[in-house]
Image (tube, rainbow, N blue to C red; front, side, top):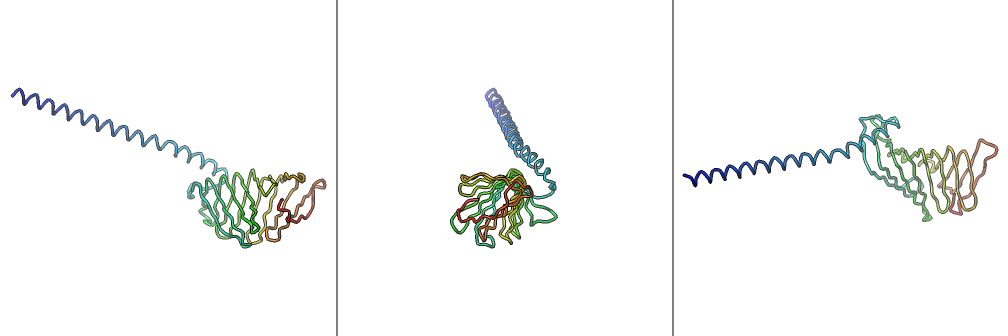
Length: 207
């Protein structure tokens, strides 16, 4: 009888110990899951706050690290990337973007890099818009502005708002630059008399 009593005590002790281990493990896993949810939630709140500043709807779909690629009407290949992309409920053809990078690959093996804080992409017309902290690189020329629009149908890149170009041949400021990517010409216009008004051929492969 004494032996059976000892065995029963040992069995109860092991059972209690097993239950403690199971409860402890469950508690740890639950805490781990909760901790993993903290970062995505914080990131999502930050992203939504940023996108709200661009007058976007909370109900739209949000995508991360998205990339679009294709060929424009002039036969040039392009790649458009964004860290954050958001569709519009009223028009799903328009994609609003944050932290934008675009690369245009021309037939002469040169390429144009464009980046901006915000942007838009029309997945039907292939038109693109760039806004705030716009920067463009082409060969040894660098361009800075606050706004840019690419029209696929016109094969025209329009740069405006505080336009500034830095080049080894000299620097310039203008109100607006029009890049005709099909005919390889550049129109520089200004409403101010002390700025440049000119038409430049892009054969030298710079801005």
